[in-house]
Length: 375
Ligand SMILES: [Zn+2]
Image (cartoon, rainbow, N blue to C red):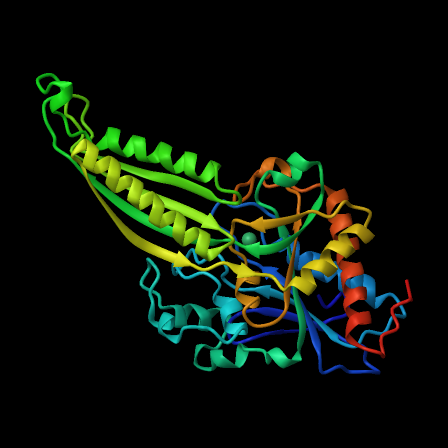
């Protein structure tokens, strides 16, 4: 960041911030470009880092031109987006958006270290974490570039996409309880097999999501009891993860799938007991920002495509605080959170080009003082 001409600081929440502005024309307004510096254990090298480095490279390119911008640019490397250590995601971006929950400071990791102590050891300041909040009136926009973390761009043969929303999510735990019994002595017509009931429901979930545009649904956990080859499964616990960009559609889907589960349970004499574990509403990106990103992608010579993000990002938090936009970059085979995570250099160049056009368009839209003709 310093080599690219920025002044650096770390805020109270551990976010690393590099600020670039025209020294002759300091600006009140700021464009924030960022992503996260952490990743998951045994993750890849590009996850959030790519978006931070794209911001640094963009400032480096801009600072070599004569262009005048009506805002400063701050590149942010957010702390602790994944939430691995404290099972609490978006710690850095929530602090910046003024939405940090102070009760989390007392939470301990598996070594018994509190979040407050960990933050202090890193150089942050838990007692003054509120100071990390930025005044939304000063923020022209928040822009985040990130790996797609999915296979759609590769499938479309495209390097980039604008993101219009980050999908909302419901996680359910379902307990199905039937009756155990000897696998050799219980006739088929007298069984109350919780696992075959669960299997039928899992296929219903798959069919339902396939027929619903924009929905993804996954049963990723199946716990069978007693899980013995010669005993009929008496109890099964499932976990459903269902995502959609429209919160009402997501709620209706969850209700309908529960109704179907109760119906098949009644038919099979197996109880069906759903319990909500987690609900996260969708985050819409700003429509004007998304449009400018689509135009900027086209400026870079790429057919503009708009996607919904099925994964969460700092942009989901920032979107509630200031006008936000997101750019996806193609990754190989949709692989992410894995050492094989990979991007093409040519795609990164196109992302940088699109971001450069975005900043230029934003400047022209924001201020009469903008002179962005310099290349
Ligand atoms: Zn990420």
